[in-house]
Image (cartoon, rainbow, N blue to C red; front, side):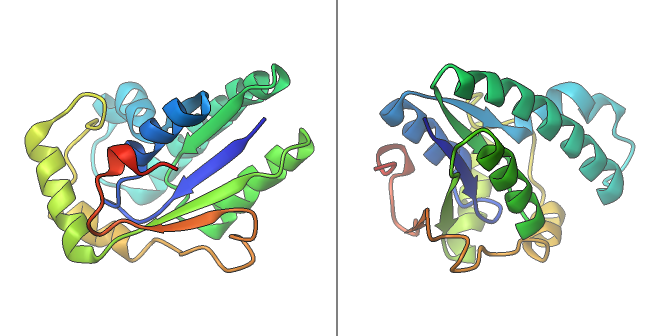
Length: 173
């Protein structure tokens, strides 16, 4: 039974990595982008960060409720929820610990130019398994300043992957 928290900045390949890893370890994967797109995109009037975060938190609560049921059945769970801040990661590590699982953090890194190119490609391709909404340059730049890399102590039970020149669909191991 595993809980894996996938984190990294915008465009690093969290969803692509999570899809490949879920296949490798027979896990149920939750990604925040389709939840937000399906549940709240039509209601969004502007890019109000506080409004968005409040709804992200609602999704996190519902996702965890389902994830907990999967763990009770001895299943594996991959959470591709952005985990932009240490506070968000700590919250899910505590929730995991409460059900007897030490969550692993998988921290993905890539150079900013690589990530910007990946976002442009994703926006152009609109692959339904990866694309929920367009990431604009404004959104990319805004979120760039929000991401808090995990500390060494957060990664004791996890891993760091540098994904500058990697085919993400085959690099989950």
